[in-house]
Length: 298
Image 1 (cartoon, rainbow, N blue to C red):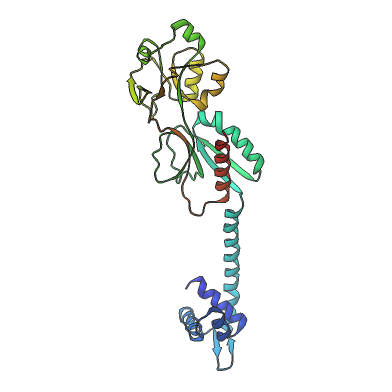
Image 2: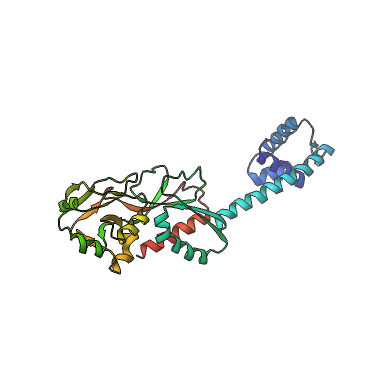
């Protein structure tokens, strides 16, 4: 049996009339009678005594109504709870992002978001590798670089620009490279992460030049790469969102400003991902809109 049949039975119990129920539903009274007869056959008991003038519940019918009415009320409450989850933000919002992006960009935004929605519990999972959103019960993932998660809904938050940078102390000691080919004369910090080439690509006037970099230092985390660059250990290729403040303060110097430089491709961006568009909880909607509004204002 389905819940619709149970609702119909409960309605007959309250109104004691096939005709009035059939009229309200726009069906023939015989259709209501057949549904009740099918229910009686399924439960193995007569639930109503019928005459040409009235419908009277049997003892079994009264007992059955007492039991299923509680079930129907529980189902209604459960539906209201689930519906409420999609109408107002509450519960726990699980977010994942890389360590470096979280520290420099996402955590400050989460602090502001928490002020707007203090009833939400925020869970930030830091991960520099791949995370399965569904398996880890992630609501929102922030990823930087190229995008390959075609099964997820993806919204681009911002384009991502890379810069070749070095500390003033390093350049004073080792000189300033003027052309991409001169990079081979310098120590570069290697970032061998998935999706990143060991070589750097320099683009100018639609012409792309691939340069093999030299370096004895290998670092697998962009935040640590920045710290080593600030310490004068070599040249590095880092995203704008990570080094903006250091560039403005003069702690890092950008090189090859006439070129577009990358180690991935020229479509790199900051992406927001979530598993599905259907039945999106309000907690995800408000966080999505918050991030989109923030980056649109930049």
